[in-house]
Length: 77
Image 1 (cartoon, rainbow, N blue to C red):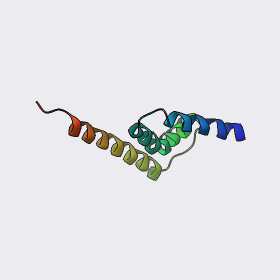
Image 2: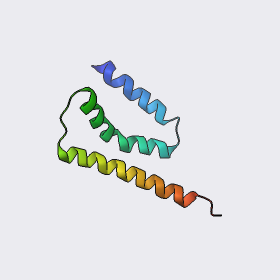
Image 3: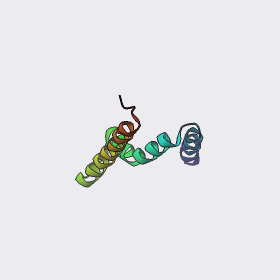
Image 4: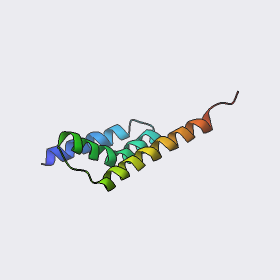
């Protein structure tokens, strides 16, 4: 119902305002992949090979970008 949608959305919007933009972008990027994983684990939803591949690509992209960013800002000896 309305409370099950509105309350989590408002909490999400509130939380986004309290984190740095980088973390907010990561959360928004991971949301679809994590939603699929939660549905698979808790709701016994079936995932197609294409959905699994898409989720893996999202995770690989986020990890790759974070590793590159950390390497770029790491101080050189």
